[in-house]
Image 1 (cartoon, rainbow, N blue to C red):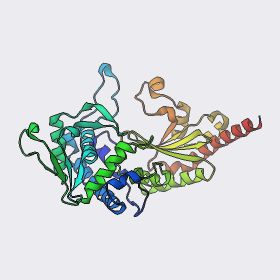
Image 2: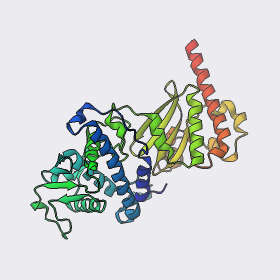
Image 3: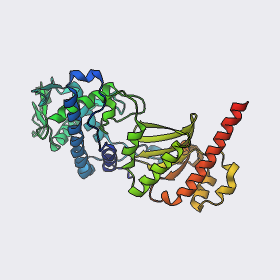
Image 4: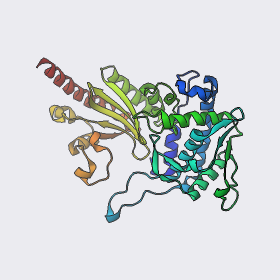
Length: 365
């Protein structure tokens, strides 16, 4: 995936759940916002709004893109930096979190514009930095392109007089139910965040409105849409193969990286990973390759070369930017992966045998 705002936007759009069930758990705290039916209808409307929001960003991303800053002294570029997406997301969360539903849910009312300047992290925390007035106006104007209406501020003026803005009324004429969805998803982002479930707001993760548990099975369905049909079938089969062999799977969204970590008794063996910067990968945390080098000799040359190179921190080992190399050997999860599926399975089987043998030895001591 390219390191662009449009590419990152497409990533979040693809991760949004396609099939939101008609009934799912809701936290009791949400009852003050609306009844269950209006909340679930609002979440569906909010997901539809996010599609409009993302489509607009994908089409016009070049107008708002900011390339990652190049470090001094010829170093490597840092992680992707998309301040416009952060600002627009923060403004939306602030509108939903601080706004009061009015007119039977037809609008959100705010006492002023100042609460909109808070920057919200991926975990829902307030950051020290604030959105400047020019950047706030830029974000508000973009939201009007997406169908959001603001009463109380003249965004058509060259320089809107913010000192004169004492109240704001926010509406969405295309589907007013969206405002209820915006409200509850903003509350989920700010108040219900759990470790390993970042960016729930941008993914319209309705599961964050319930008991807070991360559902690895349904999240894997979202992950699968990042893959081609061929690769998705391979990934699903690999996942099922090792769940059937006793491994556990833990899903987590840390920052923009979605991971499915397969372990034997808390010993990490391999991982599916996706991020807008690194694409989709399989990390294999193989530590016993010397014990089955005969099987490795039968692997295709690219796999043999990968294993011979070893894995570890890219900065320390290879003088390259961090690419999570400490998590294992990286195998691209693209249409080339199904073609070498037999060798990947042999590799994982051998590592699993080593872990199981070690576990039995420890149990016998």
